[in-house]
Image (cartoon, rainbow, N blue to C red; front, side):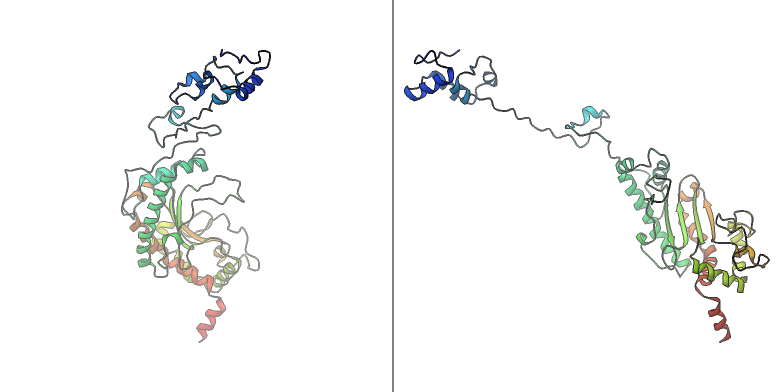
Amino acid sequence: MPARSKGSPSASPRKSAKKTASTAKPKKAPVAAETDDDESEDEYNSDALDDSDGEKTKKRKRKPEIKKKIRSPKKKKSDDTDDEFDLEDGQEFVGVVVQAPKTGLVPAGQISQNTFDFLQKLRLPECNDRQWFKLHDPVFRQAEKEWKDFIEVFTDLLIEVDDEIPPLPPKDVIHRIYRDTRFSNNKTPYKTGFSASFSRSGRKGVFAFFKPGNESLIAAGAWCPGKNELATLRSNIQRDSSRLRRMITEPTFVKYFGEPKPGARRNIFGRDDELKVAPKGIPKTHEDIDLLKCRSFAVSYQFTDKQVLAPDFKNTLSEMVGIVMPFVHCLNDMMTVPPDAEEDADDE
C-alpha cells in the first residue's frame, strides 16, 4: 500500500489526496500511473492497486476489454455445426445451401435425371417445405432452366405441326411451381412437377406435364369451359356432331386415347364432372346425349420416365401433338362460332 499524506492523518483518503494536490507538490510515487504503454495488463488488474487512492484511481482506471468479432467462415467441409460456425447470441443454425449438381447435365431440349430427382424429393412432406426449398434453391434454378430450355426447343417443333400456336417465349407458357393454397386443404407450397400449356390464345389447348413416377402426360382439349362456351359447344353438337365424332373415332386417335364409349375413363368420356342426367332442356333420348352430358372435352396420354428421359422425347411429344391437333381445332371452332352464324354462312 502506498503511504498516505502526512498532512492530515485523520482525514479520509479522498480528502487527503485533494489537500495534497492543492497545498503541496505531488510526490513522485503517484506518477507511476503515467508509465509507458508497454506495461503489462496484469499490473492494471493487480489486487495490489489501492482503490482508495483517488489520483491513482483516475489514472489507472481499467480500460474495458474489447472483444474482437470473429467472422464465421462461409463454408466448411465439416458436418459438425458447433465447430463449423461461430454464431452470436440469438442466432440459430438452419442448414447449408445445397449446390446444383455438376454431373448428369443434358443439352437444351432434353430432361435430365437431376430434374426428376429434385421433383421426386418434393413428393416427400419433409422436403415440400419452404425452408428445405430455400436451401435447395440452386438445384431448383438449374432444373427450372433445363425445363425452360426444353420448352423453347419444343415450341419450335410445335409450331411446325400446328400453325395456330404462336411462337411465345417459355415464360408465357410455363406454369409456376408454387401452389395456390388459399382455398385448398392441401397446404404444401410446391407442385411436384413442371407444366406448360400451348394454344392460339396462350395457356389453353395442349397441356404438357412432367412428373416422375411414370406420371408425365400430354393432354389436349377443353377443361371445364365457361358457361357461354359450353352452351355454344352443345348447341353446335345438337346441330351437327359429325365433325367431332369423326375426330374422336379416328384410328390413330383411338390407339392412344381409347374407344369413345361412355362408362369408363377413356377418350373424352368418364371425367369426374360428366353429368349423370341430360342437360336442362335436352331430352334424354337425344342421339348425341353421350356428348351432351360432357362438361369437359379433353383427352390425355401418359409417358413412362424412360420415355421422358430419352434424348428424342421432344420429337415423340410433337408427334403426339400432330395426332390431337385436328381434335383441338374442332373444339376451338365449335366453342367460338355460334350455330346461327354457320347457318347464315351456308345460306350465302
